[in-house]
Image 1: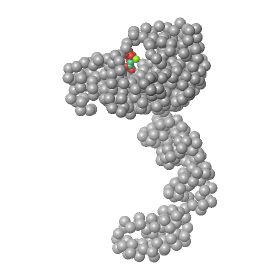
Image 2: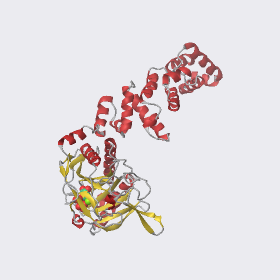
Image 3: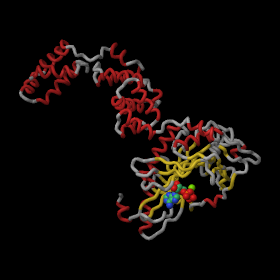
Image 4: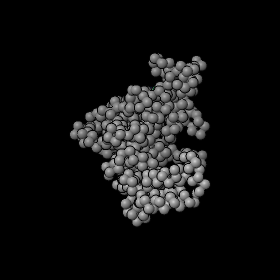
Length: 480
Ligand code: ADP
Ligand code: MG
């Protein structure tokens, strides 16, 4: 509990609205490409420009992706939903209205569980809508340019219940939501490019009181900024309310550079938008057989995978969470175990060497890594059998990254196999003993901790190949 909570007795209440661009080939109601970064105003047509007489035609792929997201997030998907016009004027909205869903969204009633919270965070609804265009304030001196390529790009808006009570929980919710959507493969989820956008609704109240007046904070381009913005707004409202003031319902814009949220406009209410069903579009119907078809395409979700990894592979929850952070990583780990690596070793290699390699790689993804799960299992097994030491295994792994060759081959060709032959070991031990008479005297005189020094010297001499167990017993008998 933070100091302000103690001082003011006011608890925060937070609900999130998350816009997610769907990765369809084309826009929601016309055939223009849904593509980020194209030359401005090249992906437009009479439909998305709202020219008179142009009629929207619904993109089936967008519905399918939206339904997949909704099912993955435990929502009920409705057989019938309705597109409505949300009317407002803005330079990036050529039609003067946005096609959205209002009274009858296609999905309601989902949830995500957070380990830190006893109750799940409920998802009130998910609806489909089209994106607006984009105002660009840095293209033309003292003027605003408008790019309408984004106009009509399909979005789902995910609306939570006001179930969150701290900025940290809100962030955790977002991390898990993004992870779930990544598993479901419905969006690029790139916050910098705007394919994932978060609005945070914040209020404070005395515990047990009805909900307080909320503000809505927008314009955060990373999860850390969402967290900072919520923290800022909670602190501001607590100060305000505890000094006897009241919160004005407004929309605030987060300024990350200054670390503050500034008022953009008074909060509009739904009646301001004059919603009405779009007469140009039929009711959306999602028949049972289509729903069933989409349901079978839902992958095992991250929370289920965490539980299974713990149960099947004996992993600690924390490790299971790391390993399931992305679907690719979890697949990679699981394939390594299937290829014969013990699950604990596979976990430490995947979270250690493999992730390090991915991070330092230019392509930066697992798919392009030359060490496939099968190859990784190979090096792990060699080490487990005692054929190579851990340092040698690391060296072999580095070479596998370069060449994509199997560990067995590298060990064979470069003579890296561990040496447990007594004659060879004795040769190295003799050399080290005669080169370090002082140390020999001291260890015989009782300085037991010098053993590490001798082991290290022999290892160095042997190029890391001396069998550590054989070496330890040999050194013991020679130095006592
Ligand atoms: P509006 O009609 O103003 O958009 P909604 O009831 O549709 O408000 O809720 C929008 C979002 O705000 C939801 O995520 C909801 O959980 C959240 N919310 C609603 N009331 C509050 C409140 N008093 N404090 C914080 N969040 C709230
Ligand atoms: Mg709203």
